[in-house]
Image 1: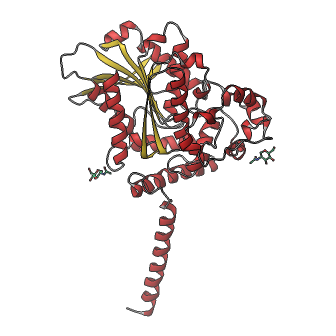
Image 2: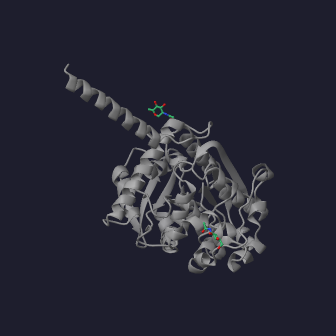
Length: 416
Ligand SMILES: *[C@@H]1O[C@H](CO)[C@@H](O)[C@H](O)[C@H]1NC(C)=O
Ligand SMILES: *[C@@H]1O[C@H](CO)[C@@H](O)[C@H](O)[C@H]1NC(C)=O
């Protein structure tokens, strides 16, 4: 080997070591010791982060809105067309103009009627689809295991539509499904219908549940609600779980705040102020009124608030809630509903993850529902991260993904 190729080789080694180091730096995030499958989670998070950054770049060069670009990446990777297995029939159709994917389990036993579940997928009100493999597989599994009909609603997303349009889509499709002749068509027992959703879908399911129970003619049509790591409030981005998990994978705090702002069609410049709770400071009239009705931090158990320092600003930024009053609208933040509304809610299941900014949203809602006399099952997973329940298949299979999904389905089996 000549002098030149030696130099080249050395050069190659230096460059590749640098690249590996850079990649490792990019992929590596410190994770709690007990979290499920940490290395796999780092890779999943790094993949999601790079897709987010690529989408930001696409927006920066003016090609498309970053959320449209990101959703395009997600959907093109994971799209699954309607298919049928010996155990489940899957059909794409529309309910009163709203697209839905319907999963019908074939009865194993000779049971005449099936249960029905309206499912609302997550994705920050802006991402994912009933038709990507993650949700398709979840709903197929549910249809099969529960001998149920699952209506997974393909509601319109941000930035095409904003709050409360998503809720209008869900309301229309659900009311269509609940009509006696439609239930009959699908062989669904009108006495065994649930609403469910994960993450932003859990937010929408909770809001829809409240709307239905305010309405005399729908109040008794929903037997159960099941909320998976739901988003429930925008009052406080410094709850103990927001503080502990501000940099946690999949859903760091600033990303959650961005989803909120986009959902409500607000200005992203508000993010830094909202990180420090300047939007609900003591001088914000609307927030002060709410605080006098609901001391949300008192809803958390002492084991969580033990060494906790709440972030409550005396003076903040009154412009944020003026421009975005929807931040404190019960339809976007179901946690703040009146007790009279909560007490009419059906039996409820809430799943929370320890390593999730939204953990305390869920815990606070459990507490409020219990106080209102609702029968609540709280299912908490110590090694879980936000979004885990859909990650059950190789290569993104997580032990906690399978355990959360099975626990959720088991509760439905016992209660629906
Ligand atoms: C929060 O509000 C205070 C008072 O208006 C202001 O001094 C501070 O800079 C704000 N913080 C952020 C991060 O916007
Ligand atoms: C994921 O699936 C692969 C292949 O089926 C399996 O070998 C592996 O143990 C699974 N990992 C987890 C965490 O479940």
